[in-house]
Image (tube, rainbow, N blue to C red; front, side, top):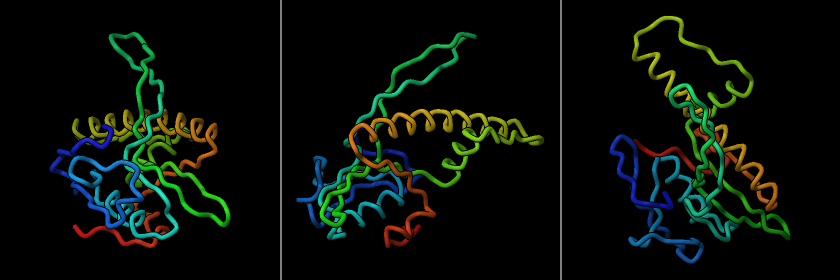
Length: 180
């Protein structure tokens, strides 16, 4: 990823042009930072306009992680790279707090929590499409769990904080949900 131009027309995506470019760690070739959802755009606006934010960037941190894949009845562990959504530094009293951020819909966050707590609810009835959607959701939850566990360890070593922001958390950033 590394802040490559988004191309999924199903989502609110585009190029955010910050007012305070000096705070952005890396601008793209269009002098902005690409966002992949309306929630990311809201956070970018917060990072840009909040006077306590010293620096920020989108998709600038890469964290290695491993994921077990199942192929032809065999399990294989493969190495991957997790490109976190954001990194920012914020004034916190006399010090600076360094934070790595992942933005996810609440539904996807809840799937990882259910996976961790072994409280997955398999659809009892429904179409084949419903089961396919459940299978996809489980694969994503499994991948997100691996990424987030790696990020927590990586951040702990560096003295950073790792947070996951959902639509329910946006009010903590004193911002409103994006208009559709």
